[in-house]
Image (tube, rainbow over all chains, first blue to last red):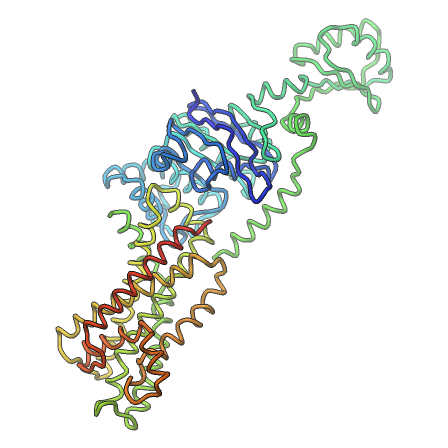
Length: 328
Length: 247
């Protein structure tokens, strides 16, 4: 029984299925990552789960409530940080949070306490009475996260929480997300097209492409599906070494390319001495050895047959950023 | 109720903080008051009364009309800058959001009309009676609510922030000029009188004139019924369209 359960959720725009009958469930307390390229259907799914977009068919249970029949209860159970900014920049940080608190029926003393608590959590207590328009991108994101948490939601949706932020701010936001997952015991579902983000943060990852779930597991398991770690050995006699390795049961795969052998093994650190022992026995010279852990990039390639196009993504980011700059 | 209040409060705060908006919206009505009122004062008299006295209630109505219609742009702003999403995912019905925004816009519109009224007093215009002033204030509120709801209807249907003022001017100008704000309904060509009588603003202007100056061409109860009916209509349409708006 997951806290979020999708049941063949589908959204069609005209005849094109943006989300194509996806079903999965998210367990309470997890950080669940929704990984896919732009246009894969991540935001559409989040919009449906947060009740602002009506699904074409299928439904989802969120905190035990049906997202179509019990909209109001679903809305009270969730907090959302949208992909695009959604703060009122002409109001102060405090006023934005107060507005949210009133909207979610928080009584005044409760509201004040929560605002102080959350501003402290995201490190904005000193900027309480500043207008949001003077905030940096990272500060706005943090304020949005704080706002999403105001009403003690059971689940927090984060749609591309670090899109368009610089690497340092990004790492900063990751820390906050981890912290609140631990401190507030809150289930977090986030979408991202950054591999590193999904890898660092998430307990579980669903890979989505063209509106369908291609794989769902923990990052470690997903990576092991690809075939374990890769040990790259550079040597003049690659043939001899590969023949020797081929006899061993614990070697998953051997590939020779450009004067090097790629050997796929599980737990490369432990296998390294064994590999060296064999090369010693057959008296082969080794120029260099490197161990490469499979990345989510490899996983993504494995399941979808393509890489996430970072370049494409950054062009879009730039546009979005432009819009933000020109916004006001 | 507290939720409607906080939406109202947000509109008010934003209005007070944008000084240029307050002053900018005063410009046009003041220009009319000055140029037409003082310029034609010595040449024209209506019903043996002063022309400045005749038009200043109309100018107040104009100010309320402008401010309320333009406040509909806040819907487009909220859509563009994402705040609409924050409201739409909150546990509150869209109808309540619409009501809060309408009351907010109407309040600023009445305030703007009140500013013109105060400035008119400074220019030496005297009002008829205090009770009349209360009647005028009530009708300012009716005009404000009706036309804010109309502005929100437009805002709900539109995405383009640049196009909104253009469309609004296209609606506001005929509404104002064909309302009997600047001319009496008697002794004008029949077609002009006909159009003015279809225009809901005519009844608002007439009631304001009754309250502030004591001149009236239409019975007050008719003014009230027509304007109240129009108000119900625009709120219904506004609510319907706002419910359909998407982000």
